[in-house]
Amino acid sequence: MYAVVGCSECSNLWIIEGRSETTQCPRCGARKAYDKRKKFVETDDAAHARDVRASMLANRQGEGEAFAKLDSFAELEGDVADGVVDNTEYLEESGLDVEKVEAAGDRDPRGPTRSGSKQEIVEGALEALEKPTEDEIVAYAGERGVSAEYVREALEKLTRRGVASESRGQYRLL
Image: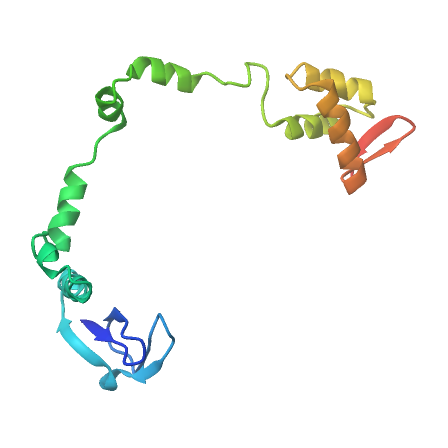
């Protein structure tokens, strides 16, 4: 069972499913016994309860006539389910070449040898290399498209944060 109820404190309207001893207004938090709440409609149909609440809200704003011209929630949901446009149709209607868009999506803008973010690559070097020096980490990351300047800054930040340590020119993750 569904009931469209109102709050006597703030005039909020909402739908209650089932029946509990007390209800609480979702807007102002006023708690009241279910029997004391003003029930505008009680129905077994959730869509009908939504329609009644929406109609009441539209009437409050002076838009009752405009709301009356709309279909019910159930009909609108059916229209949306049937009217979904797939990606291909959307792209074609937008004037785009679908094959070029798909090809662009397949390309990795970071280049073919880079996997992960720059930070992940620096941390990966610390994991993969045994007792790596700064130059070895720079070389490892450089092969994956990360600049030496970024690697040096990242190493400094990692050691400052306590994620990595440096001793006698060699780095390791902690």
